[in-house]
Length: 535
Image (cartoon, rainbow, N blue to C red; front, side, top):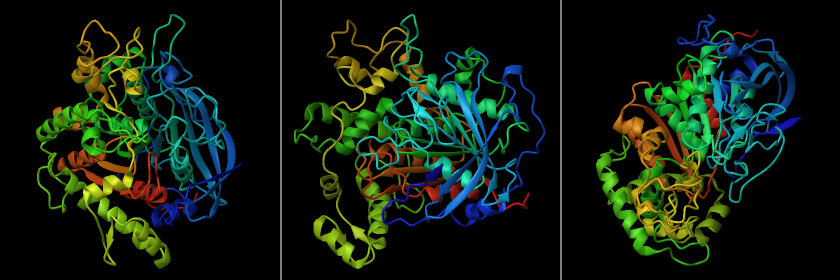
């Protein structure tokens, strides 16, 4: 079986110097690597069996087009809690390289890529995977070599918007351990007709999976103190939430209910692509960003509602008191200056990188078609209005996330055991069109919002156990969410002193991942991973 890592147009990036060496030379030890001592477990059912693997061989093509023959050990569908609600989803796969391009490697202290395939807050399962990268959505069964995509997904996301397997394959070829967790998601219903995958099930399950890995230090290969999460869209949201909320006590009762291991659920670093998060403020952010853009039908959304939500965003943004990234020249970020901040910090540099990589003839053709953009030979400049016109149609109606008619996926995510869809914002509830007897959000919603929002752990209750390294990516043409959401996340993390690598992919849409090789190299950098002696 062969796997090909996605290589985007006009981007020629390999695994990278550090990770490339690891791919042919073995796995690194670093100053903070785990010692190999075996950790205890509070439950015998949660003890990892080092011998229960299948040996598989695959070929991974890296982003430079070079093929790597990888032999790896594959542990399939390990239930990671002692009291599973549904083991079909509450299980994980582990892939550990043992030989790369004919050279034996020792992955016992390698970084661990913790890659979820969550999309649309739907359930994800690894039960039917036949090898690395085989996780699926909703209990379906695409194998590692299956190809499914969503409209506008740029070949990087599955049918519901979750990440495909590019990161996992490149990580394996670089000598890293790959853990792929399944998780419950919205829409799951038991024989009694009760829903069991709504919020906060997805984050509780992912935390439980991390606890399983960490509780098996010394048994499970890899450095459990160097876990790096990865996810796209809603999966990007829960990836950031996992990083922001490490060891937060607000999840304890939920973890106890499913029999999670008695271990830390803090992770080392976060990888997030177009995270759909900060949901209670997402409608306002979306309208601030895309409110004046028409739908694909050419019709404008209700501008009265749009303006209401933009006002809400302005008030929220002011309360955050976030500062622009270092070197940006921007102080406090507000609704009044955020357009200019996005232009100078992200959009113009993104366009500049894109144009600089084109041939002279291709650049001339692009500029002729996109007259909103000025190119002086070294730098691209344009206005915010020009950018909005260039992107064109917005994807979502208004409100984008807490729909008045309860039709949005996020309404389903905040459903209860007996109610499929619920409002989670006061504005949505107040303007409900479904005939609800009350125009208020239900009493448990505020707690659920805290459980599901990384900003709660970064702003309201600053978490000292959070990840300190953040890789965040978004396409400039992504109208599934607001550009403000990831920019706020990046700004807050850096304002707290964390290391942040955040950029936007020019002219790319939802789910884009145009520099996967750089992500693999970044993991090596932040974890201190270096070439080790050959086995």
